[in-house]
Image 1: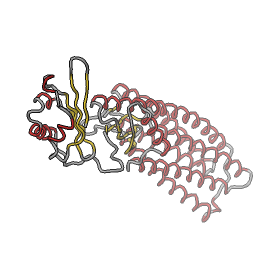
Image 2: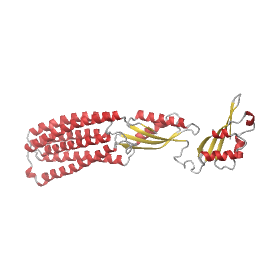
Image 3: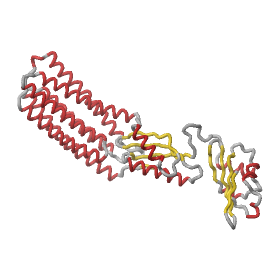
Image 4: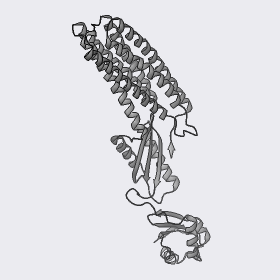
Length: 395
């Protein structure tokens, strides 16, 4: 397993950047919300009042973001070994739910006035246009600033908050157009715009809540990304095949679990090094993948049963072979034996420690014949050390 986690000082920098941009956005939202509600009430624009409520919802979301950022950017601990990023997911879902509820209330109020109380509709006045234009410019600026910070620290919550700011700018554009139309003799446009703005709020809330639900139920990465990750892993030297790749999101982080099939005769350390190389290649392409768990497999068990669980352990293998090969090989040979569990058999490699004179006539076929009663014994490979040259025998 290779895990790449954020260092405490990096977490602190990310938390500081997220808090700073969120505080700036919150102050701007509070100022705009107050101006919109006051000017909307004084100059008869229901759409501007709803837009002001939308801005105050941004203040609420900013408060949620501040609280969640502090919790989610804590370093992993004993109770949360994978970190605290799921707090960010829960905060995003909570924020989305609030926006959906707020949207429903605003739509109901606007429909009530538009359908059942049309006589109460009034024509907005020109100051409403000024406040709406000011909102468009300021919210577009805070959107760009917030999104830049969110992308820099790889925070979905900060990026989502940036898009929330842009929806406020969109809604202000709608208010601007509707108020202009109402001033030209179509007063119902103001209430219609209020409904549209409320629908925008609800749509944003749904997107935030649904994306969080998918993360909480461990939805995998999209198909294209998954296929690309598999391709990267398969092209890594030493990898014969890749199967059983699983992925999930945890806040802004992505966690991977994959099985790498390698040659069955390499060492444990070489297999681990291959896995490390796979991890490095994947993370260079996808920096958001912070934790990779790899399993090194000697055979492809994706489409068949894995190695039989009834096969004997190393100690039992050595004991059985010691009895079967008594007098043929010295004990040191069995102490350095290599075992390969493949399918329903155990293949063995022997590094012969016998004296040169005792190696005459010793073959893999002879050893297999002496151990014929062992149903689990697979291939036998012998390695000899001789003064002139190395030779090996296999059966």
